[in-house]
Length: 367
Ligand SMILES: Nc1ncnc2c1ncn2[C@@H]1O[C@H](COP(=O)(O)OP(=O)(O)OP(=O)(O)O)[C@@H](O)[C@H]1O
Image (tube, rainbow, N blue to C red; front, side, top):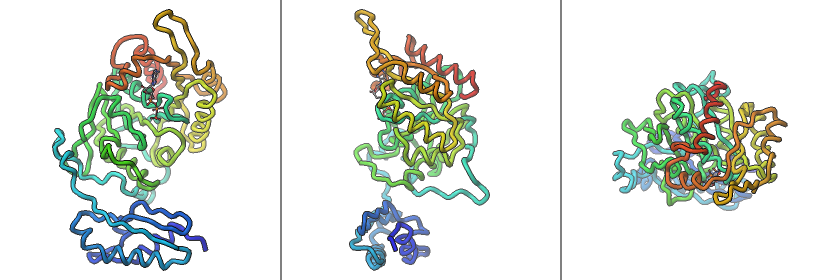
């Protein structure tokens, strides 16, 4: 018999807690890892006092899992879901949310199957890319700002759990508040209601979440943030085809996905994988955006196709999906993103380009 996570969880269900329930039913197991014959996991107590009293439980859990056939070593760490750090308490928004971001996802209610709509949000657009660094987050933030300038009620959710960049790009750093400890108050920037997983985490701590915790975090960010009434929510996905994409497409009713790519072949190969994933998950691909398509020399006006030319439009044709726009390499786009003022918030050629993409989406009923 091959050892699986389910075997371990079944064993942990037998470990009762002094105040009722067991380690699994009380949702205390985190980061359960199984590598060959080595098992490791974390028991997360609700507070430090409880954690101190739970040392016998930790030992019992360790012994129980060590006794399973096929287990050579077990490492169990006991931690507490502590109060907010003093730095967070000092945040100008008042109390930091006491929400536990990264908990396990809640199962769908009986009778609920397939992707669910989110109350108050008319459309959800996922912005994805096959490869990192192609400008997906830049496009997501600028598109959000351009749509807001068209009078749409726009939300921007930064779901790039491994490298959230929207706080920097949109120029927000406040920790969101949670007056009732249940809902998270989003922030507002450049006319866009926004929330980023990056605003809920300690920026100095590495993220070590595994699949279920990522899914729980995403569920919370969509369902527990007080988005209000939105015409469109733009979700900035992590690059590639991982758990976040899968969860979002399977659990949430999406209007569709927009895939950003640079024109060179390697980026396009990865973009194709992302597109295939959306097709498999039955999420309509609404169109492609080519980023960094052209460089115009500011000195002499010479045009250079640094990353190649025509690849994204050919791909769009092959897919029978529209090419929503082509955006050149532009220094001010990069500077604006780094400074927290997306280029689409100002005036000029790039802002016009984003306005045109935004108008196309509105005209097509997609935003
Ligand atoms: N059209 C552009 N012209 C110039 N710089 C750009 C352009 N688009 C994006 N950039 C810059 O390229 C860098 C990467 O962009 P961005 O973070 O948006 O990519 P990403 O695909 O979201 O990356 P990741 O997946 O790693 O989050 C940033 O510094 C951004 O300012």
